[in-house]
Length: 542
Image (cartoon, rainbow, N blue to C red; front, side, top):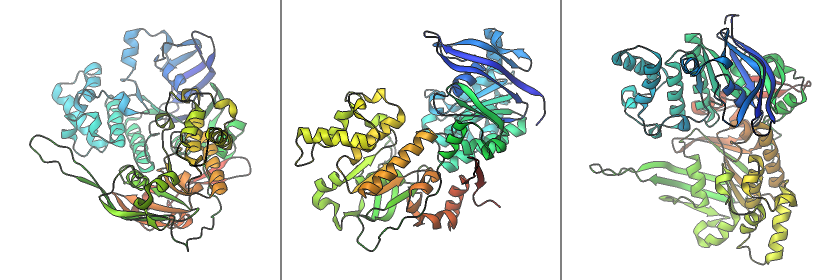
């Protein structure tokens, strides 16, 4: 890294044009050439708006109220449209959080990657093709030639993010802005993408502005960070110093909200399992075409799993490992092709209604699982519709009591889902699941879309409710930090098979399988210190 300053921001202030409310308040920072610099904060902290202002990409409702932005000594805020077009992409690249919304679904990958080279270089078509193929190979696309004619929907989330990164790095920008580039990815793919980004940027001498709410990830790769809260910078400094000894209460709050391992619980496994899935096979129908016969894809290969009374079993693995398919099959949302599922010692199908009353599910995205036309009270009451011996008044009373239990008082009863935050909506989803007092709960990535402090609150709530009602739980997650905090037992899946299982401490401290070790190496081991900070130690690294 050189000491030459690449980007200077001084007193940047942004406000809502209609109301004059400040959403970014007098922030200042510098980025040096070749440096990896981080901005951390929760949703609504203003970090994404601030970085969009760096290349004059603010939404129409937001206006600049003050400040200065200088890139290589040039004033960005006074640049004409032509200058800004030459700046964006060619000198400052931007990688967004969700590549599926950034890549054009109607254009082939080849055309999209070539677009920037046509606009910003004088390369011939053959030279452009050669550079694109080389970059696709560097970012790990298995068949670069085939990828040129493919469309975004034909790739996984991790592959799409690699393609997005390739499109930005093709132009060799001096500064790369990465706005939550790995939020939707599982831990292994997240680390692969980040390592790839660092490797490419170091090879080209590119500086990186990394924006995220994932403190451990930012800490791993950055040399300096700033912490934002409610539009203002509350703390800044060297990454290691700030994590070890945070000064501001908000930074301490963020660090204390990271998942830490709790004391192990004693679960009685001598009795028959609450839920037992034996030799489950699930095949998905293949894609039909005019000339080719559809070939089924096997998602689960004879999987067996037991969950005991009061036990929290975590199901982990990368995207495509089959963990969600197994959860949905146990819930009855996917039909197994082979195998048997037993509930309380008897076949699930013997009393399907009883099983469905006692098996509830919490989904990853509560907004898509809650009817937007129903009030919060009506949504929770709906879950009680088939409960016997409860009249209308009793259902309303139970629904209000359940909302109180998840931290939502009577004031929320008349609201609609869009009037709640993400964390509050997830509380409603949990309330719907526990209102019937079920014996078994399936939680499919229930906190992956939440900010770190909200995630901590929901996890604490989940643990409290589990202790209170003693329900068994299948907890599906790719976030092993969360699993380490909440699980009694861990089952690791890969390619539709269980490859390792055991109690939480054994799996995290002494993994046997190479894949499990790879999963664990992507997350840090966190130690809290007496100064309110944390020490990050990356697992299985000497």
